[in-house]
Image (cartoon, one colour):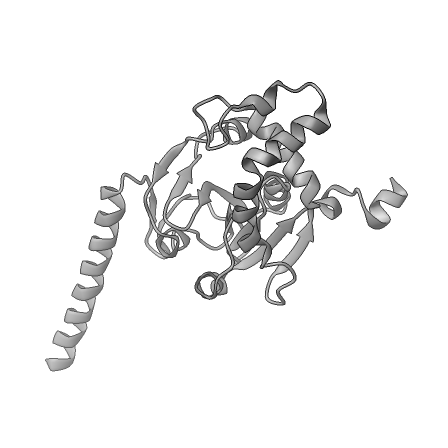
Length: 232
């Protein structure tokens, strides 16, 4: 009888914990799927691969290009971008909308919680700073770190900011956009936003060549360097 009661108590505790977890997600306004075997998740469909994958990247270095490669390999995109304390929910949007809309549905949920909503065969992405805490959080994932020549990524960020709506981002419109000369335009962009941009990406760059993840450059992915470029 004591054994049975103990089992019932354990089951009750598990159900209470699950109910609290689901209620917490609902209160945050998050739409999620529930699988009896895996619990709540961002997406119902799962790929055939049993690995969970994270793309950790420097901004404007081919993040969505890497995502397309994973989808072609059979992984399911959660369509959610993860940050340390919130997520951007792009589910139901096209890639073009993802790139253009910098103010999607934002939900306050910490990284440790959002990672639990990625199931085997699925992947998500984000621009995560390196830290011992994040390293530990990523232990159950296959992590792909994507980087790029910094000059090119910064130029890409300037072009990206130039196309945004005025209210879309912290890269506010300014006089730098009025210059017709591309070199001057880029220099003026750096004067206004350079320090903030590099303060953002410097902690992300610390993932480079860590032995427990795969580091790959945008140049290698796109075939603009090495044997691929030579044979193109």
